[in-house]
Length: 71
Image: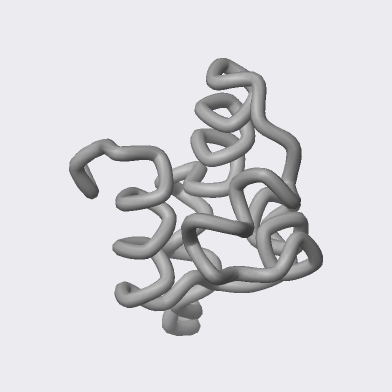
């Protein structure tokens, strides 16, 4: 039996799906979310599509950009 990778484990939380849903609910483009977070639209897009795993500091910056708690 192989150990699941970190990416696989994080995928279970659907972070990218939740990020995109919240961004669209607030009617923000990737660039608009990028300004208050200091993150590039390209990185945000990769996070939404599950191409990259977010770090905790990145998740905190996104939460602050949305003005929501991390949970």
